[in-house]
Image (tube, rainbow, N blue to C red; front, side, top):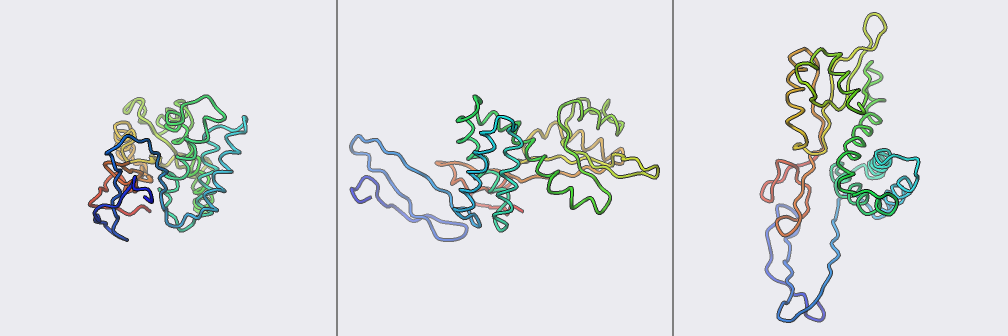
Length: 248
């Protein structure tokens, strides 16, 4: 701005907080310019961010660690270091973006494609880790399902595999019956974003509930839009620039 390449324009509107001032690039002459964009996340300190980055870097640099394990460990660390931050923001703006930056240093994988599977499994792993001590006193066990074999077996145990076919189930819930056996009482559909694999989950959920099983949805409801159509604020699947929703 001091040399006149970038200049201030009009003041925009904001749902909350300070109104933004639009910045413009002077285009009368040829020039090349790079912009470093930073996202301000309430409840996330620079110290916590850098600690999460260091931890994820170390886990991905360990050849014995699976990607899902590294992601889950980093996410749990961020949750504990930033208890007042939006968990959805930590997942979307901290762990995901760090993963895309760090992964190529150690593994010959496309980070965005890798995240689709590894991120989903990491979220399920995180839920198992966080909810096990919460549910255990109530005699309930939560278990993530890895691979098609475990998913199909869970659906078969509920007697609905033939009905829903290859429909996916992410986690199962179990209780001990009168004969001291762990039996399945339901399953949890885990989604970072509400739009993920809905066509698979809805038929399975309906079949589970019709058969008397518990079938909740657990989601971070992640969704943001990058410039020029958005401002990267994580408003969720039902949010918009005009109508923000609060993540829990």
